[in-house]
Length: 128
Image (cartoon, rainbow, N blue to C red; front, side, top):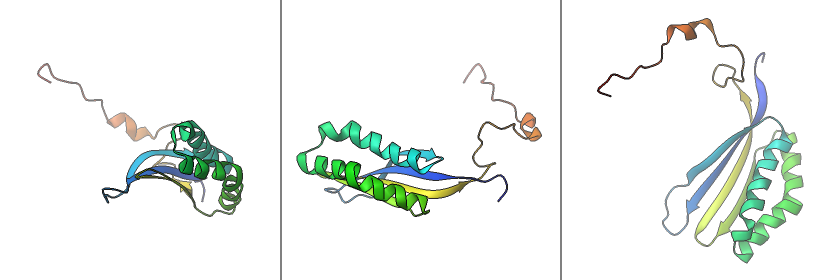
């Protein structure tokens, strides 16, 4: 597993429950520790909580005060986690999954391979 970085792939999905459409990816984030992963969800919930109805706000704050500890324990045990709140006709779901980041698929500021020099940037023509 040389060169692989352990981390967590975090996503935020929204789903319109009134339309019956498939969930839509709203945001994603790569975290390198369990605290960083659950902090991403916590910051989002704290940011939106003032705009939530009372039930959704209760869901958010319950996770912030109680569920976050369970989430952190699960992540440290390499288990995926989900946090969901429902506001009116919209369901928002955050998912956190343990992953291995591949060095070529996901570059972390390391030196690029020599073949990169073979690719030249596109130069627009006068008519572009």
